[in-house]
Image (cartoon, rainbow, N blue to C red; front, side):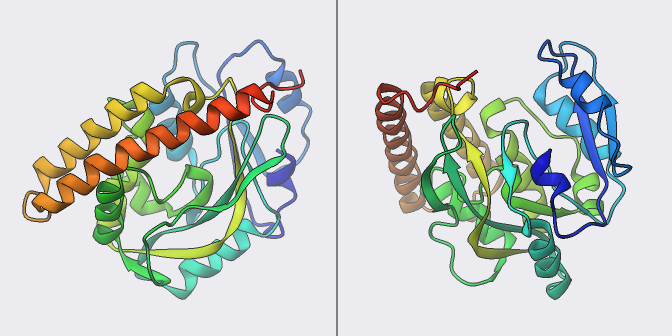
Length: 260
């Protein structure tokens, strides 16, 4: 919340979804007096896709960024990405690099993302195709992305048949509708910890990446070559093994355990 309220781009509507947790988030949010903040409540048992759909539908501004509970964006993140989309009116979304931080907020990797993408403005279908070939989400987590709100609304709902592909599944619907503006600098930070999906579900992530690739290949047979399939299979295994190795080292060093 501090990273949102501290944005240099002040014309914001901040919609927060409170899911009835036991960590006193409700009390904390109720104490915020900033008129830009609006809290919507979700019933217990709401899935991630239902939650993301609800907050996306509640957004009324020209642009929408979705940020998960323990990630953050840097002070000029929104200003820069609004500038990117304003400069490219034909683009449907903007994305940028982000830093990876541990449970304590210490950087692990800086400038992560956009691997294999060349140029500032890229055809959206080419961006999704790059994700297929590399076997990973080269666009980044939602904190790295700014959507045009109307395009996002038209593509709703967020779908979690493959929960770990929740973000990439939406990008696959939105990006091909136009272009994607890229920014090769970090605009925020994605946190990895023992509480996050990404550290606990490496095997499931491998399986769900394969299912996403299979679905993409089935719906775009004219785009997928035999070489693409080989590269995609190799890429997803390489990415999974790299994640496993990184998480093992970070866990051994205590960097995935939060202080509280």
